[in-house]
Length: 328
Image (cartoon, rainbow, N blue to C red; front, side):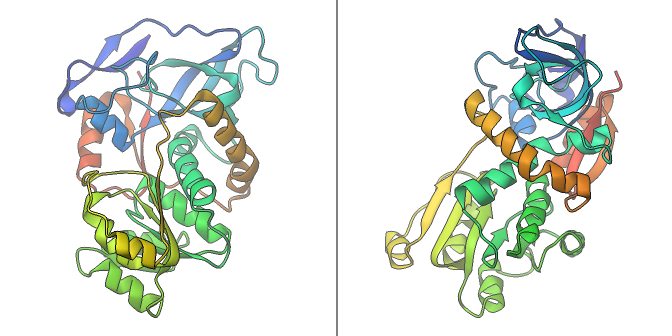
């Protein structure tokens, strides 16, 4: 089969079209013809040699999610059949014509979504859902500050939080992104290039702070995050775009009775990922089918232009997901 391969660690130019071995599927797996995949920050790190794939997963083919059509099923698979349109989270390898994955990881694409939209969902909606509800325990009426609200995770998180009746705040680098986010459920936007978001949060909450923060930025935002949290506030870190080392004021931690946690998706066990997939099937897919939640697709690129798509993501111009159509 054809795949976009990392030929050596480096810039976008190292991604090259290659012929590679076809995937092998086992008795509990399905073989899928990939119609679309999507970019994630992890792809950029993996391309640079800074984020290896888990053991047993191809190290030279990026891609953490995909949408496609099942072409073969293992002998133990009963719930799926060839021809079924599915989307799924992947441990890697979806920049390719075909992928093999456990049948238990498949989600049926709602009839109102196309393959490009479906491919934009798994990584960001699973990450956002898990962070908001399994880690932060966000409930209706609470407030949540979502950093990089125009990112894939950000656009998923603001919709999920808005849907349950939480008050949503978000940061972004442009007023245009904040305006677009307001159309999908953002209550208060903060342009972090123009103002201190901790001061803006304090003003909006009348000095109380926010109940929860979902952070993908890391080091540069940590002090402001601590100042932005309310008494008994909770912070979850799901990304470290500006670094992973911080200094922690234990006095503030104790005085405000804060809870700080972190999470990562890629390295989790298959059992954990299956459990998360089932949560998405039960709680998110019906809302996608009803149009309550919508995939936020910034742009669709032919996979043969993956280098340009990576450069575009690195420019931070996108609002929502950058999708690759696998038109090899």
